Length: 357
Ligand code: BT5
Image (cartoon, rainbow, N blue to C red):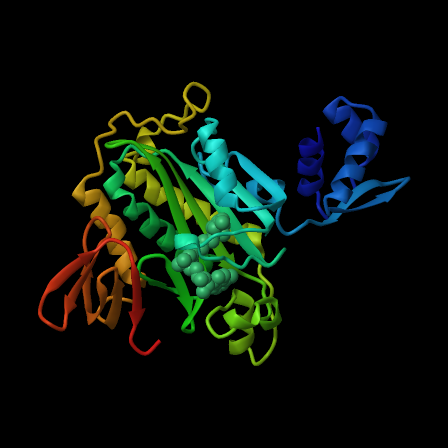
């Protein structure tokens, strides 16, 4: 009922809807309407009331389950949202519910993370209420060695969503950093549970710095991290601009779903959504494994936004460091590096620093 009340208030946002009309339309008492309105207010919805005219919605919270779902253009990504005020790590939470059999496309979002993680156990700073801290559960029918393509797709989805909603053009540093003005705007942590030849599930964790001011970052990150707000301030002579996190998140899910359909061999006209029988949202009629053509189309998108290709880089590998040029990327997401000694390497993971950064 609460969702229906919100739906009705939203339809007439800016004008009053009478409590009587709502109670008739939704088949509940006026007291029930009043209780739900009170709850909505507690969740941050600004709802005016007048004994004669009824209720009027005048403002909505920036990020919550309703706001993400309102106008969401996806078929299965984000159709189940777990919204938490505080969590240790959205990735850890998503892995737990994946093991318990949650639906494909489930998204965990939190305002605050108390122990967010980067790769290799590094810390991820997640300032409360300022960023998008989220994890998406996927169950792709691809072999474990192809999973990197999903990280690349997620990076492209982030860049495209930011561009669509804010007009800001960020770039991707291989494999998982989104960079703006030479600083890190977003990081992606993909984790997987698999058997020898089969992926059980993947959790794609995405952290985007949105409405941070400089002071919201700890001292050690100020030189290397940025946010959309800091960037907008820098180009608008100090005027600060905050961005709507739900809008960015929604678009990100849309962009990611488009690419994931390609990866998972589910062109949208073949999608058969079956959420109840086996926990997988998408069952392709024709679920051949990932073809080279499919992954090439993702990699081609990735190339458009790459900051790494063509640059002189230093690769920090287990056996030591070497310098070279990032010449290309393979269809499964490995970076091809032509080292200064003439040897060509294909690297799947690891640290790369770009000369001049
Ligand atoms: C990453 O790791 O960049 C992956 C970050 C993924 C975070 C998301 S948030 C939602 C989900 N839940 C989680 O627990 N994690 C995911 P890596 O490439 O290892 O980079 C980590 C490094 O980035 C740190 O060592 C810092 O130097 C830097 N860093 C930490 N917090 C940052 C921030 N907010 N913005 C920019 N850089 C940051």
